Amino acid sequence: MLNQENVLSEERQRQKRKAAVLKHLNILLFLAPFAVVFSIFFLYPLGYGIYVSFFKWNIYNPSVNEFVGFENYFKILFDSENIYHQYFMEGMWNTFLFVLMSVPCMLIVPFALAYLINMKPFGWKVFKCIFFAPGVISIAAVGIIFTELFNTDYGLINNVFDLEIQWTNHQPYAWIVILLCTVWWSIGSNLVIFHAALAEVDKTVYEAASLDGCVGLKKIWYITLPSIKNQFMVVLMTTVIGSFGLYGQSYLITKGGPDDTTQTVIMRIQAAASKPGFTGMVSAMAICLGIVIIICTVIQHFATKDHGDRVSRHSRAKAAKGEVKA
Image 1 (tube, helix red, strand yellow):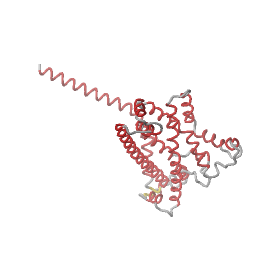
Image 2 (tube, helix red, strand yellow):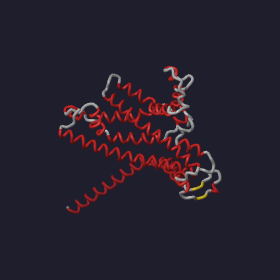
Image 3 (tube, one colour):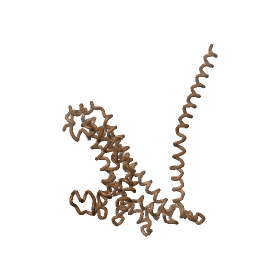
Image 4 (tube, one colour):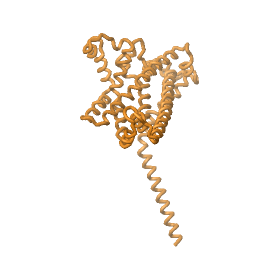
């Protein structure tokens, strides 16, 4: 009898192991197409770019390629006499400036709109579609729209408001146009994420906070933001990464002007890539940009996470003591 039970137990164990193996094989089969595409179009170009960045690389004559180690990186980052140091740093400064301007706008505006839509006013679904619609338009069409809107001679903005501003030829107007274009074109995706997050916040928490006297902006600060901190961090990091990748708006609307003040690092990398003999230097620029983006997103992640945790603890402590007042 014991032998039969042992045999049955072993058989059940074998069946469980077989089922587990089949389950893992199914998972691997589902992941395989993505893994192949990801490897071909991301991992291989990334690895090849890192490899090239350590060489004085001539794409037109590979036989003269020379290994230079970290020399390309040193010239870009620290050699002030090298033309590519200034070339890269000016592009990075312009990009950082845009990130500082665009990220707050692309967080505050979609969050405010999502908060209003979450109150479900009349026609809220229509407004949600309207705000999301620009995101499906190509950047080429968006660039043409804003170029025509802010045209100095016949643009709608100058004509309606009786202005004579040369929007794309002077600062800070050029950055204003690019910023407005980016916010109008990109807030839809952030708005959808914020709206979905706000819809999941427990309404009883708002009711309890109102009874304790927490209303208005304090309710948003102590209740709403801590409740959606995970979604907020996702939106923040994707927005930062997207802002560092600014290219189409600046290229189509201002052509990098006036005086290269809107020429971003991506535009400079693309322009330098067309010159023979500088492929290694250009690859080093791209890797440096990637490292900067990683550093910024990591800092944003921990700073936002720590702040959200502190606000949550503070809010819970004050709510427990009944100290949250308007």
